[in-house]
Amino acid sequence: MVGREKELKIRFMPGQCELVEEDVDIPNRRVLITGATGLLGRAVYKEFNENNWHAVGCGYSRARPKFERINLLNSVEVHDIIQDFQPHVIVHCAAERRPDVVESQADAVSQLNVTASGNLAKEAAGVGAFLIYISTDYVFDGTNPPYKESDAPNPLNLYGKTKLEGEKAVLENNEGAAVLRIPILYGEVENLEESAVTVMFDKVQFSNKSANMDHWQQRFPTNIKDVACVCRQLSEKRMLDPSIKGTFHWSGNEQMTKYEMACAIADAFNLPSSHLRPITDSPVVGALRPRNAQLDCSKLEMLGIGQRTPFRVGIRESLWPFLVDKRWRQTVFH
Ligand SMILES: NC(=O)c1ccc[n+]([C@@H]2O[C@H](COP(=O)([O-])OP(=O)(O)OC[C@H]3O[C@@H](n4cnc5c(N)ncnc54)[C@H](OP(=O)(O)O)[C@@H]3O)[C@@H](O)[C@H]2O)c1
Image 1: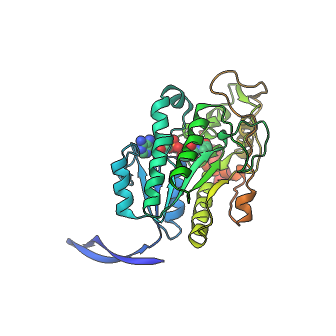
Image 2: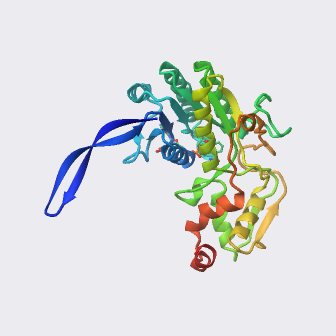
Image 3: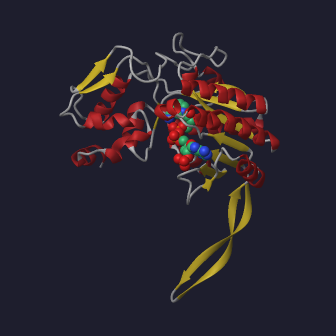
């Protein structure tokens, strides 16, 4: 599965250096990842790159120097990179998912989450690439879990609505594409605010202040590395079996409210949790949320696809760089 290409390298010798052309192995399975600068996209890029795929990542404001800078709203840029790279697989992670931005800039968000997704799907079909569109459990209203792929969606908020419209735009423009719905994500973050799970860490760590935590909405925190692995496994299965297409669900299987996640985080770092206060009322501020949008993952499991990292293991791995009390670093990790 590898081809050979020439690459220019600088060779250093005592007193001089020279430019030499060397043979390098390039895997001949090609994958293009949108949103490769984001939380999930970074993990997807790494997963493919480390498993004998030639991966090219696209970002936007954070793209340089590692990734290609492509504005997905610019159809010429999208057309050109797909024609140049001729990917076998495209994993479409880019989207706007911040609730405040979604609510305040509805038209711009719809351009990215819906119109650009449909356009990408059309371009993917043009080169015969398998497109995986990443969607969300927020397409369901959360009143009748667990949800199978065939269950009727009914998103409660604008984010869920744009992601569902994105699913439709993708499948209308590319009948061989896949939609992968996933729930709340956590994993290696650049800053704690990047994930709705890791953002709780400071409230957990600073135990001198009591903190209210939602204990109403049932969540299934899912590790980005596990989703990335599912994307790769799905792509590899599809390369052997073209009948693999349509909608799929993947999720962690530990049901927790945010309060329970915060307690589990405290437990993972041997920190106190008595300052955390469970709030059992349904939230009155912000966008409406589904009470329990649990995803039934049996369709992927039947294909032999899946990976689940226990929450306590994954969260410790993700959060230890942000631990304020260095004594715990020494006792827990060294
Ligand atoms: N995070 C969750 O808990 C969660 C849960 C369920 C589903 N999902 C879905 O999972 C996917 C990945 O989410 P994420 O959390 O990784 O998102 P994220 O961290 O917010 O990353 C968003 C990505 O989109 C890129 N982007 C934004 N505008 C763009 C444009 N005009 N052109 C090209 N790229 C653009 C960003 O690039 P720059 O940063 O370089 O500008 C960034 O790489 C999304 O489809 C989301 O709906 C996420």
